[in-house]
Length: 378
Image (cartoon, rainbow, N blue to C red; front, side):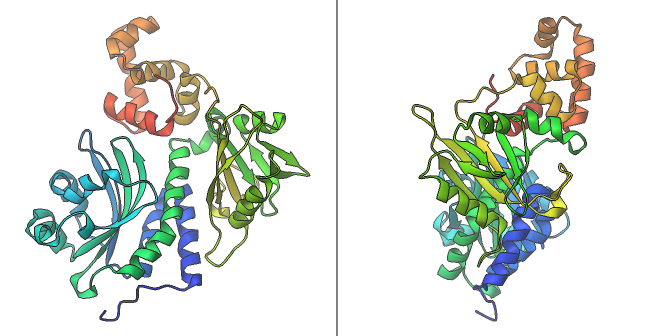
């Protein structure tokens, strides 16, 4: 193995998992997290890759790469990436080695490997699927140089251990997508999902409007002596264990989990994600948080779309109405007619929406709204 060590200690895994959850809240923390994960796996490069198979769009964040590699990959080599297309069947949290997707002989004849990856000094990839939403996917992928040898069972086992945390980090990032840090109270209240923040002792520190509604009625979740509890007696130990895992450092650090919590018949179970937070990420609280609990009620009715867009992106009421019409499939002229304004006025408002959402085209705007508000109605 020429000195490359695939196995990692519990302390090393714990430190890496902590970085992953920090990156879930602050995207700028992903590069050091990827470097740490790459080192644990004995890799030579790492990247986050997201793309839409429907329109061919792609975006990457890579470490230990070369200048211009990101642009080259997006412009040319992504379209030649057969393993990417063949990963479409993977479920979030699954891992795969590229040789399982693409025969090694064919790999070496591919321009992706023969040209692009050769310049990256990369021989093979080990990948974890983070998001699989229709044609849209996001992965964390780790490359290895030929001198390091092949990915083997210990490498895959280690990524299998890390992948659930990477998946949860991606889920948290998507839930917080688009939230304006200057007005996070209204933004969190605009979420149809419940958002609950716990302090280091597990006491309730914050709950948005959706969470407050559930807690007030005891609909699957309730608060007793300041602590979060499951309504169902059989679910109480499971939720308590998940909160403890997020608050207290275990063998592999503070960890996140996904749960289903029962409600009174015939209500559908709540889908709950519990994950650690770090003090550095306390941009929406007066007091340092320790854990976040996201609660998805499959029966909930979301706030009106324009109100959600106003809170998430800092739009004016009129800008939010224009954005909502565009998201619902209306062309700009039709949107202007529905809203009782001239096409030129609608165009001015749409330009402001583009500026505030960091988009440039209507299709981009529709995608960012769909990803920030996956349950938004059409």
